[in-house]
Image (cartoon, rainbow, N blue to C red; front, top):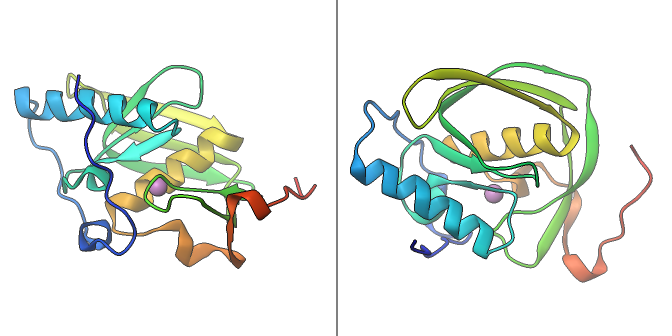
Amino acid sequence: MAIRNIREIGDEVLTKKCREVKEMNDRTRELIEDMLDTMYEANGVGLAAPQVGVLKRIVVIDIGEGPVVLINPQIVETSGSQTGGEGCLSVPGKIGKVTRPNYAKVVALDENMEEYTVEGTELMARAICHECDHLDGKLYVDMVEGGLMNIEDYEEEDTE
Ligand code: NI
């Protein structure tokens, strides 16, 4: 188990497009384990490889229903919309209102490099979209409606 340093906004690595994973090896397996450890340690619901400084198309998500590992994820379907507070471990202490699809379906490889499909609504859909954006160097702060706020100042509105 190893906790990796989470890169924060302003770090160039967060703005780069990540490369596809071509094969599974010990180094990548260790990266995935460390990403999970790092996400849980930080009480996050998702983490993308560039957030620990690695430009590979890997994300991990756990919205409280167990770990989901997505390698080379591709969002193949979305529908609906949701508007709500969103944060990021790379933007500590901040939150902003972001509109996302309310449903997302993603095709990805698992840790054995086998293709599978993950779908989710609400928080899971939001996490899938947010984490996949990281792989293309995009941060949620550029999608915020009404400005970024400090977490302690934010009040959830009944918009959903
Ligand atoms: Ni993030």
